[in-house]
Image (cartoon, rainbow, N blue to C red):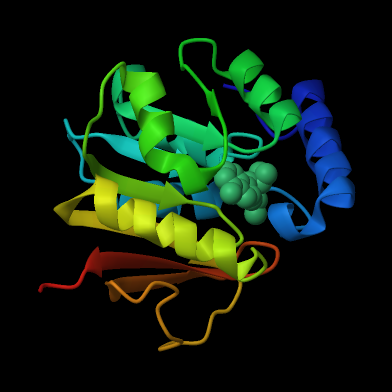
Length: 198
Ligand SMILES: C[S@@+](CC[C@H](N)C(=O)[O-])C[C@H]1O[C@@H](n2cnc3c(N)ncnc32)[C@H](O)[C@@H]1O
């Protein structure tokens, strides 16, 4: 696994910043998440776990690495990234994973492409910049979550808004756990959402 002092790390950050300049609304962060934030996100995935986990907005792979370290196998982890350049970088960094380049608005199709058949998702771990994405994209992503996640599935998201009790980004999901990572630049909060019971 690469560490933050290796030349590969500098290359990853370079690609990330280039993507940020070309697509600021879609990248939504000045630098990749810290390992500390990535580890906190992964800690909300049960271990051991044999369900299907989807990572949305994998970026340079810091959360992907934490999820693999948590014990997920390459077959049960679907890492999705919209940017072709970041998806190529991820594929080079994680040769055992089948990285899926595509838009989270087409989640069901992307999971099917990875798994070879439609499968329901148990856990979503998201680095998507929900607050800067167009509202049409947000609506499309929520519709896909609603359609393709298991009823007792959970959705893990980080945000740079560390205030408690801000509204859920999705009307069908309620926050059930929350934890702030102060030692991230900037500080971030990890929220775990579950689907509302009907
Ligand atoms: C804030 S960065 C997070 C990257 C990484 N997970 C991290 O924590 O460092 C957001 C990532 O989401 C990707 N992204 C944005 N919109 C997306 C979408 N609709 N579908 C898939 N990925 C998307 C961006 O290209 C970017 O890599």
